[in-house]
Length: 193
Image 1 (cartoon, one colour):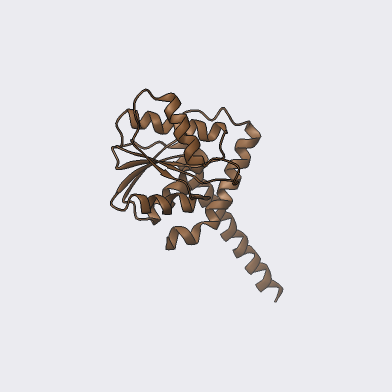
Image 2: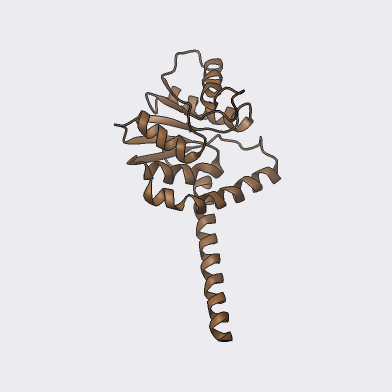
């Protein structure tokens, strides 16, 4: 009996370590790679808390891609954290308006409160789109990619701000580990939409 228990514990530990390493490879792999971004049907910014360097820099990265002609429209995706605040999408629109001299073709998606909702609601706003460029912080790109794929986008490219210096090292470590946990919790959503 003891041998069986010990063997089961060893197998469980092996599976856990293997899953952890696969999860880490996905999160860090997307964070450290930057695909050759091709023209797409839309650029989608995944929301973050308003008035944060994360959302500000994500928005500037999407604006850069838009102004360089990578897509004809930008989806600003993010709801409200509280009834007292503006939506993340409205905040992104204000950042774009302040940093662009030309009008920007945008779609506001103001009802999402998670990465799942960002991409599910974006799919509803872009029913005919087959390709998108997901813009978020580097640690968040893997989840954005797989969620976009589960929503039926055929070609999914990704991009992040060129710097993450607005995070303290400890904050960045926290975000990477938090993202690894989120990837595990999103597994059913990746598989079943």
